[in-house]
Amino acid sequence: FTSFDTSYLDQVKFKEQKNGKKLTIQVNEKIPELSVEDFERLKNVINETFKWGSYDSVLFISDDESGVEFESFGMLADMAIMHQTQKGYYLYESSDGRRFLAPSSESYETVQEAIKMMKVKESGTHLQPILSDDTKIEDIQKNGKELIIQFSSSANIENKPEDVLMVEGLLLTAKDFGFTKVKFKNASTTKVGAYDLSKSVQVPYAPNPITIES
Image (cartoon, rainbow, N blue to C red; front, side):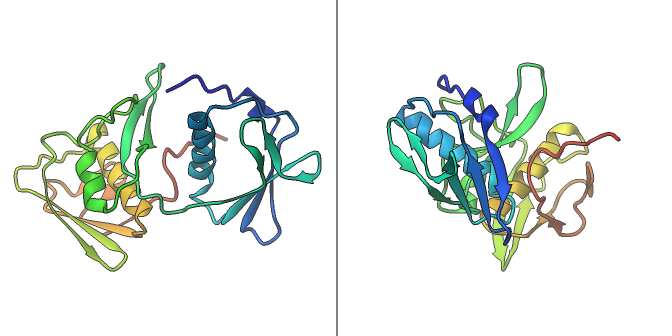
């Protein structure tokens, strides 16, 4: 990761349009000069943040005027949200030991390719694979909006934190390719975390849910 100062985002205000399909982002602070890489990363962060909802686009405004001025790139006014970014999911572990699922930096042509690459550490990032060599996937098939993942007989799937991350990462990857549920076949257990692998599993709304205590 390069140095990416996002402190100015503390001043950002978000507002949902009446139809619920467009989100307004108001930025009153001047956007500092960004490299091409960081500008693309900023747009990617915005897309990844809002692609899970119903928003089709983001409207940028500043001082009640349409558009936000970037020193290096001119005016950015309207940005379409891509909901199916066709990415695989990896493990990101923070400095304090918290674990998160994070999307790959690359998009893939097929879900099969994305899942295959999830066994390999992504070069140049802190992302770690969530599929180990012991997680042998024998076949991946599509059935309409359902993705069927068949493990080999030697796969050792257990109800443990690593396999919960694996299941959730596969579910999120399936969702990123437009699938609404996943059928896990030939798993060595029917229970992984909160997931019942004996039947089709609905893809989650978004990654990394947070429990809010009342």
